[in-house]
Length: 366
Image (tube, rainbow, N blue to C red):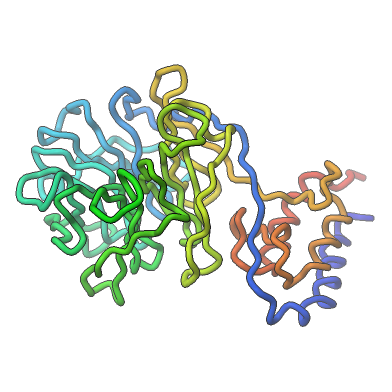
C-alpha cells in the first residue's frame, strides 16, 4: 500500500468507530523508557560535583538550577540560578543568580516554576521560618519582569519538622511537596495543598496516603505537563539501589486519586542515587544521579508502546487494532498526546501512532 493511502485508511476506520467511544471510561497508556544518555554537556555551566538542575519552564526556555559550591556572584549559601535561551534549538546562556530578593545567606534550593512562569516555589532554611526548612514563593508580573521578594507560605503549609521538594500543578491550584510532619507513613511523605484560585492562599495539606507514600523517605520532584503523572525519589525497600530510586504515580484525571507508586525500573534506576524530573514537554525524564560515584545528569526518553501485538513490527495490523479499540478502556492504545496517554483513545493517539508508523515504513522512492 502506498504511503499516501495510510492517512485515508486510518480516517475511514476512525469514522466507523468514533460514535461507539463517546461514553467510554478513561483509558491509561503503557509506556517504556529509552536508554539514559548523559546530558551534562548540554549544561556546561553546571558543575556536577555540587550543582544540578531543578526544573524547566513550560516553554523550555528557562532552566533553574541550584549551586552548593559557592559560585561567584552568590549570596553565601546554596542559591538558585537560571539560564535562558531564545529557542529550544539554541544553547543555554550564561547563568544568572535570582538575586537577594529570592536568595539569602542560607540554603535556597529545590526550585519549581509554575506553568505560566510567574511563580517560583522553593525551600529554604533561612531565619524566620517555622521549621528546619520551609516552602517559599516568589512572583513576577511578566516573564520578563524581575522576581519579587520571596514570601514564606506560612504555618498552615510549613511545620517545625521541615518541608521541601515543591511541585506545582499546571493550573497552579495544587502544590505537592514532601514533609516530615507527624502523622505520615515514613520519614518524608508526599502531601498536596490546594487553592480555589491563583489569588487564594494554600489550604491545609493532605497526605497522599499509603498508595504513594512508604515507610521510607518519599521526596517529591515534579509533575508532568498535564498533571496526571508525578515522579519522585524514594529509598523505600525493594528498589534497585542502596539510596534513592525513581518512582512514579499516575491518576486517570485531575479529580481522580493517585494510583499506587511504581518503581521506574532498572533502565532509569542504574545508580546508587536516582532523582527523576520531567522535561518541559513531557517527552523525557531528566535524572540527577551518581553512576560510578560521579554526579551527572542523564536523560531517558519516555516512549509509547505502539507495537500493539508485540510482533516487533509497527504496521497496518497495529493501526487497525488502534482503530478497533477507539474509545475503549483498554490501556494499550492510549498513547497520546503524552506517552502515558490522556485518558481517552482518540485522534491524539492516532497522531502519535502515525509518527512511529512513518518512521518504520518510509515511503519507497520512485
